[in-house]
Image (cartoon, rainbow, N blue to C red; front, top):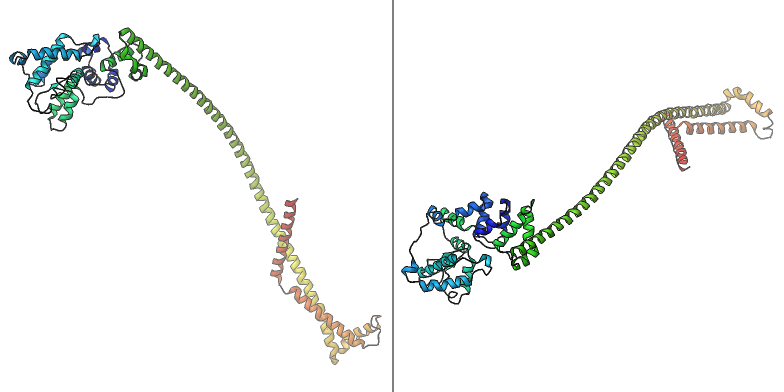
Length: 429
């Protein structure tokens, strides 16, 4: 793992993507977590963990220096474990454990199994465990015929942290394990790539100038990479596969950009058309405003003209009404006078002392060709005059009865009604 992060360098910005896409907790994921937080380089990170004893001393973690293999005669067990560790290890020649690494794991397993309490059912009850991030050792204890039925001798950091969560550890105790073994959370998604393979792919992507973390994530999630990267045997084949995935993603991005540009162009045309339509509508609105202003001015002038005409019409109507009322009153008065004279004549004819006053009138009537019958002319004349007088007075009363104000009002209403009929006729035409 230390060699992988050196041989496949990536920018600091890629560390978050690697940590997000990790499939296990190991040395590489710990490097990603540290680099994304502090920006540490691969060289400095390897140097920091080159002396584990010094780190443990600084963290005040006690170290047991006893040689349990020699002291407890565990040579045969250790030898058997060396073959088992090698058997369950990575078959890829580039990732096979060195002899020293195999001896280290075998000695640790033998010592842990020797120190575990007997007759226990869990690793925690046994009081001794081998804390590791090596999944090959987990496979060994799960599938080896000798160790699968025994108490687990190895636990992953994530398993240990889950156990510690139900206890009440001190802050420094918790931070110690977090610092040594990264996060207890593992990203077990659909990815089939190991952390080392993820680092190799990101290193190849970073080889191309201008690559971004987002683009690296696209390449990592590419189906071609997910399905076939592990099948490639040589580094050249792996690089060619990554290059092909990069080219595919670039083509997809170019097609997306072209589609976006086309949509932007269409949107720009639509916006331009909308602006033109808006300008036309604005011009139409301005024209309508001008026309409305002109109409409003004409309306105001018409209102003034109509107001002046109405005032003139009111004056003319009032004048005509006055004249008609006066004429009617005059005619009624004349009828009253004539009728009164006729009635007075009849009265004088019936009173002997006053009869001589109307005698000339009666004599004139007798000489008229109208009255040449043998009837009593005097009586007939008086009767006719009386009748005419009464009729004249009655007509005069009917004429002048409404009074001057009522007659004036009535004639005004008639004039307005006549004007409305004329207006309706003009509108119909």
